Image (tube, rainbow, N blue to C red; front, side, top):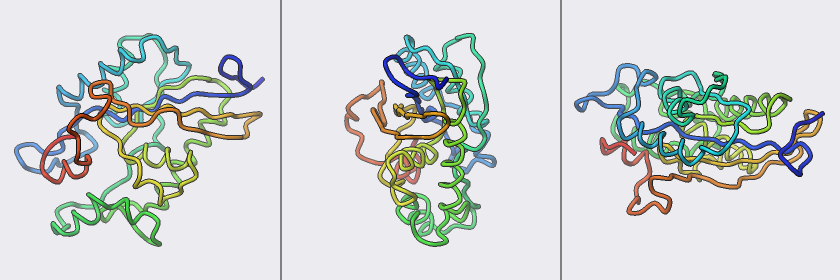
Amino acid sequence: MTPGLPGTQGRRRIYLMRHGEVDYKFGGKGVLNPDAVELTNKGRNQAALMGEALANITFDLSAHTGLLRTKQTLNAALDGRDMPVEEIGGLREIRTGRFAELTPERIEAEFVYGFETAHLPGACFAGGELFAAFYNRIADAMVTLLARNDWTTALLVCHGGTNRAVLSWVTHGGPEGMASFEQDTGCLNVIDADVIDGEIIRCFVRTTNFTPYDPIKTGKYLTNMELYRLGRSG
């Protein structure tokens, strides 16, 4: 029997978070291994606030991407709940190239505003992973997740680029649609999907980029990528 939310046939709900704030630069120097960065104190607070917002939600499934910042965010959001936690490596962030090899102009074009070129043939993110391959990787991971018959409500903690890809996939935007979804640190998206006998019938977005620490984005006028370029955290 296909599981479903109350009053529905086969409807699942995904609470899709972005990890909390991290600092990719220490003392103005690039981090040697961006995959190993930890949450800042602000990032931990963002995750804890989301945990309070989700306190009354019962999750059948919780997962991170395997990177430390998503693990820490998930742990803080679950706030000590005793439940299994999974790793879904297919939802990891898009891979960048070597920043030391990028000129300031290329960082501007390929990192800060790189997603605007995601639909172009052969386009890659800051000299790294091809956008088309990344989008397909995320789509495949979502199809695999939704094909499972062991959950109805899931909490996933992922990344800004990953969440862009998921939201674009849900809204049929393809790689080109990824540029339109801003994802603030510690934010939440709510996605519902109707799945009958393993077939995805429809998906729709109920909430996107919700941040309990600043619900209406007061004074937030720069994108996260623009803030990173200026050496500031999102």
